[in-house]
Image 1 (cartoon, rainbow, N blue to C red):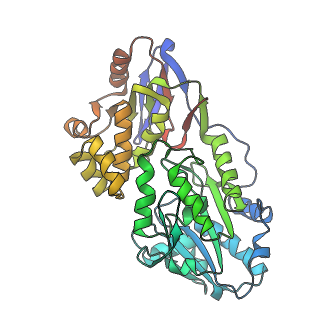
Image 2: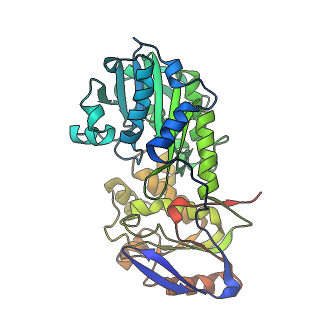
Image 3: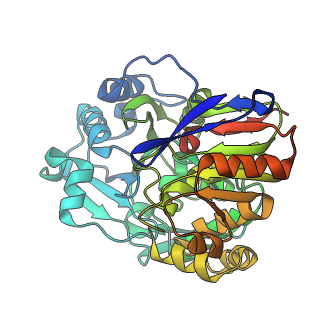
Length: 416
């Protein structure tokens, strides 16, 4: 059986014996109704487990809208105008609205970036556009897991809080979106550290919500600070809005998660001996930092002691300095232990890769130097065919091979 996977701006071909073929995972086809701003407006008119936004906000209240920073794919410039129109119907003035760009522990934005994020019309209005500041937080309590509830002070003192975000799979919070706009979005360094240190626990995994310690903190934050309304969106591969959910912070978010699962969650009978995965070519495989998500998704499809064959150019190298330092200078166990007590952006992705290395061998077909690949505990191969043949040799002639041509956006779910 012949297959062709995207690799950088080209494709690579390989063959696998028919008797070894198990399954090829591709996004499910789902029925799409309205899209883009039409879908956002629909969701605002049909909120989930909540009154309409225009029935919640009142003139004269200090209203804070929390949305994502420049590192996230959330199209705030599309969603914000719809939300603002709804609030104007309630008589809310622009001077009483503040948009907070939730930085978490990321860097501040330039003014040009702020304009890009919120759109020119909103940027040039009387609405205040500010970055969150993890050094300007006040403590509201402590979560059951011991995580402090430290919230950006202006948000903590707001009359109304509206959270925007996009729902996609998150490799240790389960899913993005929902109350994640507050934790870690507008939280302190100490809170982010405590919350993210739980990422190494087995329950902190893609697609898991209720028993996930990272998500438990995120959701419990609402016991200390009220989220009045959310608007979350699901995007397709072209970053177009194909689903919007508005209303109650939890009920609407969970509806968004369920929709995501219908499209990208794919059930399998059992884990495979060998998984062949690609992020999907350029720009998703431009570096190892970007390619990590597909590797993390593939770990859910492979048996303990199996082989993941990863096809990713990564021609620009690691893509992030801390990530590179950890990958090149720490053992997998050192990365996992250090992230528990010293959470660092970049290091967290290295620790996630370390957990995959502990479960399976990673045969890596890339544009990187072989010695460099070996130094990060991957096994280098020049071609996909060579890697697959070697994996079959290791796993046995009856080994089952599962294929993931869209590794970053498909989540294998083993049937219970």
